[in-house]
Image (cartoon, rainbow over all chains, first blue to last red):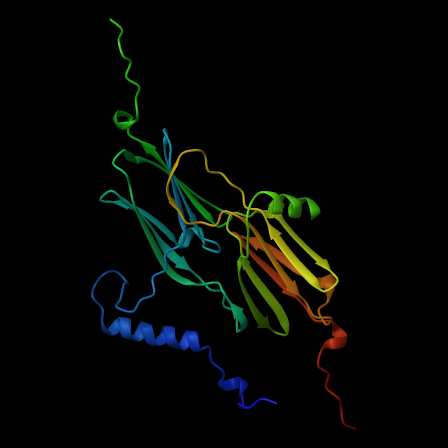
Length: 148
Length: 118
């Protein structure tokens, strides 16, 4: 027998309540940074960044994120991935919740050799892949030593 | 199944994917996040009362120097013990954008019944 009497209709997700309170507070303490309020929970998804001779590859885990909710920008030598992971509406009563939803942002500083004109991005199976080329003049080169 | 298991145990580490379970109109809905896994790399099996989800993410990265390495590098694997009341024949699985949604329905016989008073 339960010690605490539970009423289904009164049952509320405590996390949701907390988020709602955070939203209210964020609105109150709006500092003007685009939707980064004081108590905003900005999630940063896991990323891999690889460098090779030809260029750079960035992989970001974004399961369940729609293409149209994703925004990629290059500014001041940094690449920013931001967007929103939407929660499906029909989810009601959770027995377990390990997945997250909400807005996220990830900024990766680009090395000097990265060519921002050559950026190709693809979202597939919940993984965002961004390929960035290297500037020709900054690619590693071999210097031959002349024998005399 | 055995193939995937053996390979996973021999080489790559195995991680448990993030998972949410919720109740939806009497059905149990599982949402498992496995970024990088496509339809061919996913195996779902039921053995007696054990539901196993195994996913092998596609690796497209080349060789080079890692400047950041935070993503999971293993294969996904999660096991659940399911109740007798779950109907094994009507399990529905959908994989979209690296998120697997499994819908488990309860057997008709296990559903709550209303007894009419005459």
